[in-house]
Image (tube, rainbow, N blue to C red):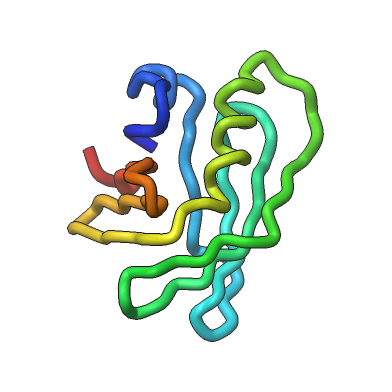
Length: 109
């Protein structure tokens, strides 16, 4: 993750913030997970051909960590993401109010 909310890129990198959408697939639904520094966050993402995404079934492990602010913000907003855009090695998720989460592939600088 390289851009999210009020968090700096350095904060995101230090906490190894990111998502993984390579989990179990059923049709256009994929079991995804995210890490924001401590807990494992899991969800189901349904990708549609028109650039729309539906994220549901959101949950996480329940360890208490130093970095709960980032995790709580992510958990609160991930379900609101309704659009996706893939440009090369970059993925942008956005809601209908202009809020974005930006990611770059882990194997890309």
